[in-house]
Structure formats: structure tokens, C-alpha cells
Length: 107
Image 1 (cartoon, rainbow, N blue to C red):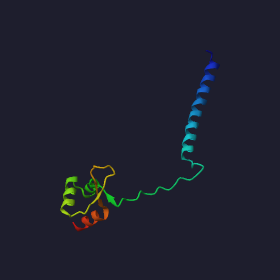
Image 2 (tube, one colour):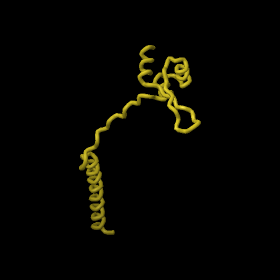
Image 3 (tube, rainbow, N blue to C red):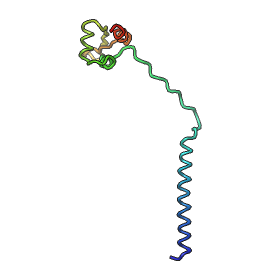
Image 4 (spheres, helix red, strand yellow):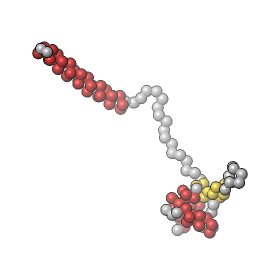
């Protein structure tokens, strides 16, 4: 290979490297550019449920589920039984969040 061909190849390689750098810069600027079309919807927080499971009460109070069931059985923490849709299945138990907050305030 003669010297002229080597110089031409080196020039092409340099141009290719510069193009790669330019493409990367354009990609970054496109990623940061605002998108056209409909603006994104604002994120609204999910509503907090009024009735929570005993396992969620346990996490809130920092105790085990057994302790929560003991509090419910003693009447210290009122609970609601929600009947199951399936005949013969156990009813689910829920505690009002307001009752949990009141119990925490009393302690």
C-alpha cells in the first residue's frame, strides 16, 4: 500500500471518529429535549385506604401480626369482618385507619 492510500485511510478513520462523536452528542441533546405532543399527566398520589389489613397494621405499629390479632381480640383495636364472596371461605378482617391512628395517639 502506498503512502497516499495510507493517508486517505487515516483521513477516513478520523472523519468516522468525528461522526461518532457528533452522533453521540446529538443523541444526548435529543434525550434532553422536550417531547412534542400531549404533555405528560401530573402524577397524583393514590388515595390511602380507609380499611387496612392486619398485616398492614402490624407494619404501621411495628409489631407482629399475632400482636395485632391479640389487640383485636381484646377489643383494644376495633376490626370489621368482610364476608368472602366464596361460600365456606373465611371472612377477611380489616381495621379502620382512623382507629389505628387513635390507638397510636392513646399510647
